[in-house]
Length: 445
Figure 1 (cartoon, rainbow, N blue to C red):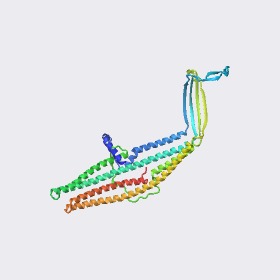
Figure 2: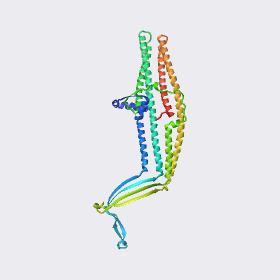
Figure 3: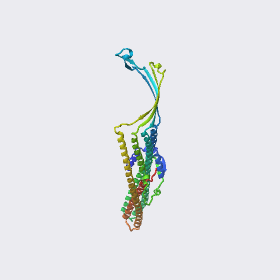
Figure 4: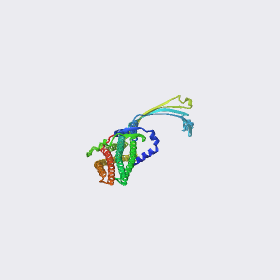
């Protein structure tokens, strides 16, 4: 995933250079500032907030089902052919025949109001509770997005800090190596060393320059990745105010607590999902209950054979009543819907148990990796200091004529390798710290 983001950001930087120049702004951020900025500008969080509003509207929509429903209607009819019915001839003194008679008038019109009010529906009452739980679920989903954003921003921020530290070490090496190269070149002119001694140091210097260019490009890419995670435009200028030394790395072993489940947003989300499953079971049970509603309507009808006389006379109608609906036979659909809802609830119970085990495993793994990373960082830091001392002593011996340039070159190479190992251990340590905080539920939203 990280490589894909690198490729994406690199492609954007090539495809839209003018856009980046037009949107060039400058900002300085500490880690907490970067996290706060991301919480306001990251697209995923914005969408999560929109989902919250959708959930709120869904709750209001569900409430509206139980409120009075009022509708108005109007109609106009022009009978081009008035309906005709056949009546027995006995009514007209012609037994044994059927007489066609037209019933109705050419023009008809009507206006009316209709009111419906739900009095009792078990599925509505359960659905009302479920909609509120759905709102709770959306809020927790936003919290999960906030936590994921915090983790992503923190890791990206640490990547930039580590790249800066790596660049500082390379610059220090280049400064020292440049002085050694100049001194060796001067000694070559005076005939005290051979040309191969200068060549060895030149190779090291060229390798360091190449590595420095690579680190600078990687640093720019890490900064763009940080901007991306923060929701900042890639063309903006970003300056970090925190340093590696500002990062608080706890050197004491971390002991997991029994309360870690309740601190994990994933567990809380699954608990809310369990509530929804239980409400779903109640909803399907309520479908077996009757529903009751009240209704009322009033209307006015107008009839005439001539359009000009249509609205001269009004024929009003008003009715009120109750409507009871009792489910009898549904082909077993409701029964199997209820059974499936119960099975879904059982699946959620199993997922909760599995998540508990997964959290325990994640905490144990994160602690082990974190503690191992502490030891590795301490060892690599000691190795780096030893490599510096070895190089110092080797150079003194070389300057005094009792050592060889090959020993100096080897010591320089060992120091560079030790520094690279230190940088890798430092990066792993910082990332492991974030992973452990996330596993313990210490990253809040």
